[in-house]
Image (cartoon, rainbow, N blue to C red; front, side, top):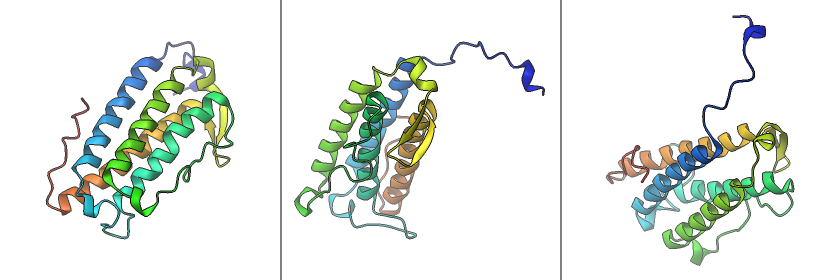
Length: 170
């Protein structure tokens, strides 16, 4: 295929609103997986050398909300990224994690609405480490969530807990 023949004036196949709605569906499903996890295993259980699911969720919290905020403000100082808030021993609970998850989701909603179509095409250096176009950076945030949620589902099954259906994003 000759790439010179590709029409670059094609309208996007999905609007930013529809993309956000899809991502929020994934966020709701990931929240269900967090909620299904046994409290005593959330930060202790692992298989195959992987991190405990609570640690994976903490990474998602530290990346997604602060990441969207960093994209909008074009300022990555104080975005945290992987360490925005260290959990104390008392905070290493399902309730604390769900509260942070909900706050992160609200941050995504607040800042995502401020991303223009032009901004999606621009290049960013997210967290001072990951260079790419804004749209691919946002896709990374979502894909990373799906990846870690799948690991959580494997953990749940290995613990004998039926996970939420992967298509249940309501």
